[in-house]
Structures are given as C-alpha cells and as structure tokens.
Amino acid sequence: MLIIACFFGVKMTLSYLSCDRHCCIVIVDLASANTVPSQQTDKLQQLVRNDFQKYKVIHTDGDKRYGCIACGNRFRKWNTLNNHIRLHTGVKPHHCTVCDKWFRTHGSLTIHKRIHEGSRPYSCSVCGNSFTQSGTLTTHMRLHSGEKPYECPVCGDSFTTSSILNVHFRLHTGQKPFKCSVCGQRFLTSSLLKVHSRVHTGEKAYRCPVCDKSFRQHCTLKVHSRVHTGDKPYKCSVCQKCFRQSSSLTAHSRVHSGECPYKCSLCASSFKQSCQLFAHLELHHPDEYGAKKYKCAICDKEYADRSSLWSHRFVHLSVKPFSCSECGKSFSRRTNLQSHRKYRHHADGKLVPEKT
Image 1 (cartoon, one colour):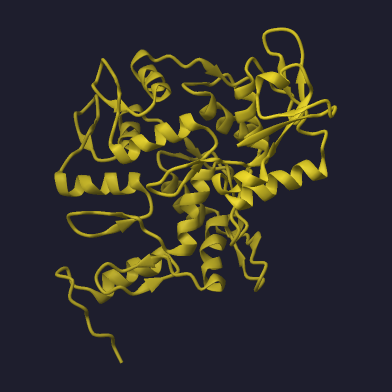
Image 2: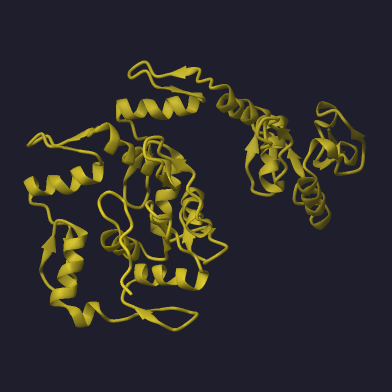
C-alpha cells in the first residue's frame, strides 16, 4: 500500500485522486513492508529522508500535469508517474511467485509470467514468429519492412529501436557505464557485462543436448548446434557456397569483391581478414608492433596488445576459464588449451601419457 503525503501538510490520504491538486511525494507505508522487499523499502525511506524535495510531484494544467523533479519528465497520469518514480527509488513491489523475481509494474510482471506459461500471443503475419510482447512484434516487423526510424545525430546511421540507438551513441561518447566488479573492465551494455562475468565465475549455462558441451552464450550454442545438424543458413550469392556463421560469409564475400578493410597503419598494405593483418605486423613490423605498451598493474609485465594483457590477468585471478572437454583440465589461456588438445589427446579422445 502506498501513502500519498501532501507536501504542504494539508492532508494525508490513501486516495490518489483526493490529493490530486497538491504537491505530493510518495512514501512507503511501514505496515505494508511485507509486500515490498525490505531492502527496497529501506532504500526509498532513506532517499526521502536525505532529500525530501527531490521526489515532490508538481501538478500543473495541461496534458502532462504530473512532473518528476528528479529528472524533469512529465506524465499525463498519476499512476504513470508513480511507476516512473520507482526508477529513481528502485522499488519493485510486484512479485513473481514462480522464480522470485520482482518488477516495478504489474504490466511487467504479466509479461514476465508468459515465460513460465509459454504464452506468445503476438504473431508475425509474414513469417509466423510469435512474441510475448506487442512491442517486440512491432520491432520484429521492421526486419521485414526495412524501417529504421531511429537515426544517430552524429553519423546518420539508423536503427530499428531507440535502445539500439542509445547503445550505438555510446560508441561516439566513449561511455561504458557497466563495470565488472572483479577486474574493472567496462562495457557498453549490461548484457555484455553479464556474459563477461562468466569468465570469472566459469559458468556455462548453455549445454548442447547432443555432445554435452557447454557454452557461456546462447548464440554460441546455436552456432555450435549446426555442427550436428549440418545446417548452413548463410549462402554466398555469387558462388552459392554455404556457411554456418554470418561472419564466415562476410569474410568469404571479400574473395569476390576484393575488399580489404583491414589496413596496416605502418605501410600501405591492406588485408581481407584481421588475422592476416596481425600476421603482417609481426612479420614486417616487429619493432613497431612489438612495442609493449600495456602493463599489468600487479606484476608490471608488459604486452603489445590489450588482449594479451587481458589473458595474462587470469594468472592473478586464479581463473582458468578454458576447460578441456576430454579430461576436464582447465587453462587460463585458450592457446594453452588448444596445444593441450593437440598434443595430449588422440582423435578418439584417449589421453596420451605425458613424457617424464
């Protein structure tokens, strides 16, 4: 239950409408703490104590008469503002009894429940795919129509959703708001941070039902499954050759187009693939490319590129994210795992005795 407390102290009421003409703030009734997670209740109460003015609601005439002082956004309905305020307070009063997740709005909880129910009421009339939300269907339809209504003001690129545009815009600003609490690396999106965190935890939540291999990302499992099915959905329009991954098709298409997008910054050479550029740098520009400019903050070792430094960090973190599917032995570097598989296992998976 929410109590609407009049900012001017004129009245206190449990009714939204009877406080309609006043400047108000929203506080949580202590008696209703059992309907809201206690840590969220405490957070909201502390915010109100620290800055009573911040969550004041301004009522004015016009279509959007309810304004949030915290961020300036305005709304036509009190209930919409009430839901919006939870963005600032972190309160999530709606609880899923199946998986114990909490949500800001009843509508979000209703949509979430469809995951457990398997309900997908919104279907695409073109391809037949179905979705749990109408907004997801609207976005999906743009794949068929080619509509990209959200344009970047910096470079002019267009996108199907505002959220994709927001992430893209961070490429221009350099903003990476999501930080790993273990190693400090920063990311553009929370989903990238979530995937990265599995490097530290070793979690591989996506398991292949055929060969029992596990993967950190669902998309990686999806690509892997094509090894078993033989599915190669990406076809070259020139020679009709098919590929399991879109990136493989992109690299292959450069054979026909002659495109060489990877250019050497030290000479005029250019290459079709990034690995070819790295090989060129190591062979023809060893002094410049070998300049060690990335230093480990723990042991002061230096590396020529960021990825090598990143791999080195696992040594200090005692993390070995690369595991052998044959014997279970783990390694801090992917190259060490590859060497292990090559020299320690036969093709039939039997272990080769180590030399003494």
